[in-house]
Image (cartoon, rainbow, N blue to C red; front, side, top):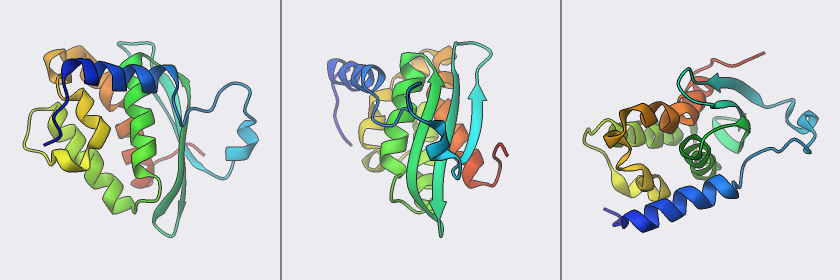
Length: 150
């Protein structure tokens, strides 16, 4: 298992919150993503309101992005997931999401496949934050399983 101190976990989360690699900002032409599958996800308990965009070709995720407003936990976890699933098969992406959710819900999981997502290993201690931590994962899962906004 990847061993991260609490400080390292905080740094990973804040880095992906302050400078997300996969966030489409307001100045990016959304038309560039019109052929992507997308789904809007929001939360009743937080400011989280994001749209996830996936470009899937022949069962492989070529690109993954998100837009919108979200808290640090939601933004960072979605950004890391987008990084991790690019170039992966849908099956492999679903496996990563399954392991991530297993970790969050204190079930047995494969920490090796989670990489930076291990930064969220203590999230279960704040039950209200689990929704934030899984919003992006749920959206990606829904798109892969055929549910998306048309």
